[in-house]
Length: 290
Image 1 (cartoon, rainbow, N blue to C red):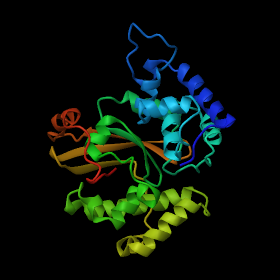
Image 2: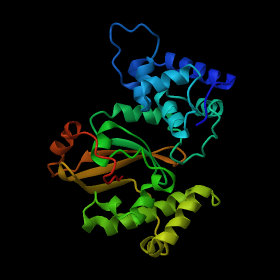
Image 3: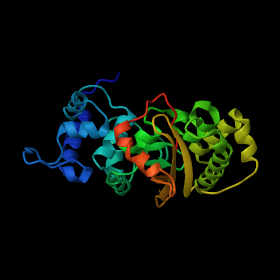
Image 4: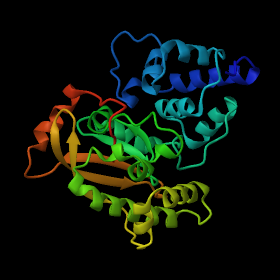
């Protein structure tokens, strides 16, 4: 564990405090309330938004405690609605390398993040073009499971789909072949849009070619198609079979997508989705998908 205490970490605390004080609660979907005594957000509110303990966040603002992980820095950047330059500055102050765009610590554009938080009545999440989940709203966690714990290659759902049988349990078995084809065609399109020497895409594809005969066979067919909208059937552990439309909004460079899920017409899924807030978040050990 790296203990903080240098001048740079003191500056990190001051920077966090300055960014916190400029945000209005309404900007992040929090009630304003009549008795607020501080400008902007309170420390406990930032901690809540970033998924950190209040004590830990207080230590960061004081420039004390342990060095924040890359995942925590990414979470703080999202909670505080930092710009790309501000996010990079935060990594530098914390003594962490700035992550490449497209991995699990990627910076979500504030506009896309704001739209996600405004989608309060439907499951929604932001993923990368390699199917790494960056952030989910509460209903998405309830529908698909909390995906924040996956690291390394496993952060990509495509990787888990072809290497971990349990990742497929959310889909009915009859739908597995179609989902496999769609994932491979989408991955080929995403990899082609990136630089040919992109290390993350090359590593993901290389691992899957080595580990999955199914992936290798589908990859050899050279099908290519971005997933823009899908109708999915999902096996929810509490609600049963739920049929949804999965819609995509792409970022300008195509490396991030906002996904949101609506009930499929002609089904009883609207009522089932209304129950998500009551059901709550699925267990981390269960399957997750997008």
